[in-house]
Length: 188
Length: 132
Image (cartoon, rainbow over the protein chains, first blue to last red):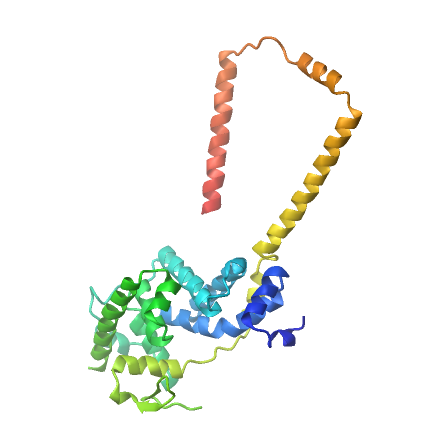
């Protein structure tokens, strides 16, 4: 099947082609549809480290390709992909001990955000959000990103991340307070 | 579509001013609206180069086919052996090879323990190395 023909297919059909026929072009079409969102999310989770985020996105897609047969059509492909992405991110954090000092223990100083490099209006917003999220521990950071940016419901977040609903609620409540304090400190 | 910093679109697509909302929600809403569509560049190309050549399912299919051929070969082999080999003489000659008594010397026991220990160490190392 030609590349152009694949663009009109639904995700379920692309997954089926990639799994049963080992069709890498079908998988490439899936990558094409989701790479931007996934790479953006991973940039937000890695304090806007573009190279690292892209490496993690590559690992995520390779993992997804290997486990494509396990994908259940009832779920959204993007949610399933994000779940893999989150696990890849978490594995990286555990391996490399990324800086994850939480504001819960160490309140953010306003000048920490001011020290961020200057960007144009649009990219400044993304960098600012990434800087704020970087003050949370990885799990809470992911929850807040899914909730505030991706606008997933608490139940969806629980399903994606494989953590109890109560934990999601706690992360949202505590994370919001920390982020609001951080933002306030930055504004002052 | 151009969005101004300080304005957000909420779920019903109505544009409102961020001043009316929690600054945190406003910031994330702005980020959401301004999220860039990241260009693919060489991302997909690089990914396709790194992809394993076959998926897990395809690999299982190949393994399944290989197993089927092995099974067919084994059945044919057994059938030919049954038809062309004299079972009684084979059995008696095989039993003739086994001696009535076996002497196990202390040196042999030490050699066996050493071999088992060495192979266990190699197996452990292989598993650990593979896991890492």
